[in-house]
Each structure stands twice: as structure tokens, then as C-alpha cells.
Image: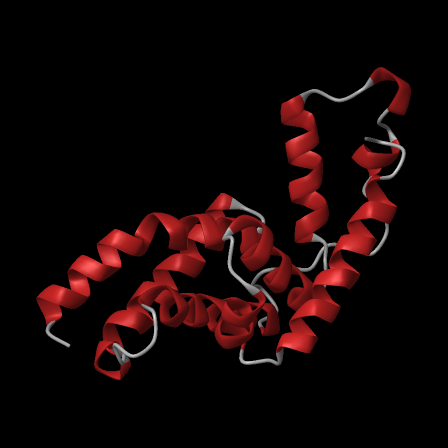
Length: 164
């Protein structure tokens, strides 16, 4: 692929990649670093892109790999604790939540999911990818995608019950 074409594709898909990185990292600042690493890898590996696959799939694979690399690093992205955060326990369910508070709460809980469940949920729920597309991006079976999606949804349902 020629560099001009690659650059156009990258710029065209950058907003979706940025949204994906933010949801995956759970924090805009960490997502910025994650996306920067992914773009550097994508540019270095632009010759490896085969137009048989979708550019989004290829780019998201790179973002997921960068995310996983950062999880392995001590000072990279950290997983949230298994226990509900203090701010969740302090919410009065009878008082209701504003739309912004609810969105923030859901985002924190998604960020607290185990990495594979988070990857699957973000790709399906926020990037509107099919099970087959998610399987291709993550390099796992469609059954594995469905199982992780089910676990993620059940966990979120359990943690958010009573607050919604």
C-alpha cells in the first residue's frame, strides 16, 4: 500500500480508533498514550496491511496489542480492583443518578472488567462490531467472544443492580 493511501485511511479511522482506545483504557490520558503507540506501530507496519481485511480490524488489532502490552507493564494501565469503588457504595439508589453520573459509573465499571471481557464488550457495545469481527480483531473464536460478552454483561448487571 502506498503511503498516501495509508495516511488517508489512518486519518479517516482515527476518530473511531480514539473512541476505542478511550473506552479500552478507561481514561483519556492513558488512551492518548495507547493510541500514540498504536499509530507508531501502524505506521511502521503499514506494509503489513493487506487490503483483503478491513483497515479498522487491522488498526484495532494493533490497539488491542498495545493495550495488552501496557497491562503487562508495571507502570502501564492498571486494572481496577474487584471490589466496588467507594463512590459506588456511597451512591444513594433512591436519589437516582443523573445521566452524566450514570455514564461515568458505567465507564468505571467497564474499565474494571478483566481485560478480555473489556475488549469484547467495548468492541461489541461501543464499536458496534459483530461477533465475527470481534473474533477476528482479538484472534479468538466466536464462541469465546460470546462467552466473554456474556460474562461481562452479567458482571455489569450484578454490579449496577439497585443503582439503575
